[in-house]
Length: 240
Ligand code: F6R
Image (cartoon, rainbow, N blue to C red; front, side, top):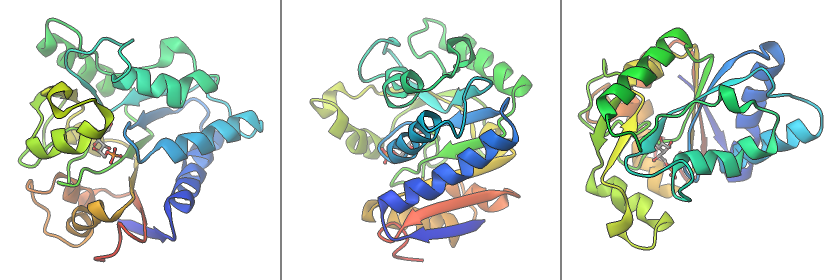
C-alpha cells in the first residue's frame, strides 16, 4: 500500500483529485467507484473545478457507488443517491443512465443485491474511492464481514449509527440497515484510493496500514491489494 500523508484536509482532497483526474484523462470511458460521507466532499469539489476548467469530462464515465441506506427513496435528502447528485453529479456532465448505486428502497433487497453484484461483475471498477469508518469499515462492511463478501444487506453497528447521526436530527432517525458493495467486489477494482481525515480515524488508519490483516478491521484487507493508495491528513496519520 502506498501511503501519502498530507498537512490537512485540503491537501488530501487535492492529491486525491490528481489521482482521479489522471484516470479520467487516460481512460475517459472508465468505471469510477465512488463513496459518500464527509471525507470525499473536498475531492468532489476539486473534480467539479477540473470539469468546469475544461480539464476533464465525465461524459464517458460509469459510476459505481459503494452503498445506500435501506428504506430511503432516491429523492430523500439523507439518501446517498441525493448526496451524490448534490455533491458531484449535478455539477458535471456524467450521463444519468450511467449512474449506479444500490437501491435501498426496493422491497426485494436480496434481488437488489444480486442485481448490483451482476452489474459490478460486468463493469469492474477501474478505480474505487473509499473513506474509512472509525471502526475500520469500508463501504458498510462492518468488522467481522468476510473478505469474500459480495453486495449484501447489513445491520449497521451502534458505532456507525453514532458516527453518522451527525447528519440526521437524532440517532433514532439513522436507518438501521444498508445495502453495501462487498469486500471482494471492492478488492476487484484495478486501483483503490482510500482517504482518511481527522484524529477519530487515526486508530483505524493505523490498523489498516500496520495492523494484522483481519476481518476485525475490514480495511486491513487493502494490504493485499496490488495498487492501493491511502491518502491521510496529519491528524488521521498520527499513529503511523
Ligand atoms: C460511504 C461509505 C463509508 C464512509 C465512512 C467514512 O459511502 O461507504 O464507508 O466512507 O463511513 O465516513 P465519513 O467520510 O463521513 O467519515
